[in-house]
Length: 83
Image (tube, rainbow, N blue to C red):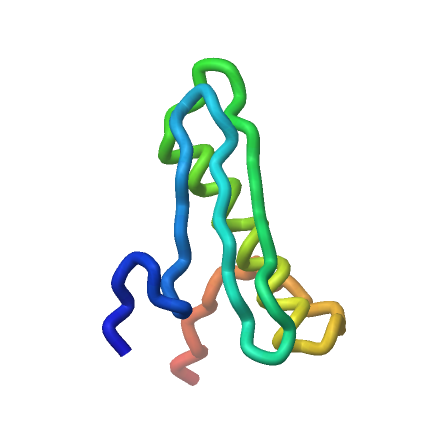
């Protein structure tokens, strides 16, 4: 698998800071899924891409878990007691 533009397994991200960013991901057995985000005024491109990534990640997580809710854990690691 070469993962070059135009290959079936290559995610394409297109856009600029004034037009929507779009990604199309082809999931075997499910088909292509299209994602798009509109950049906010004066938003850095990296933040627009981050929002696009979060959208893709949420959908792929849903696909991989069969739609089951995935708990989000936001806890700090604690040092074990030395006793």
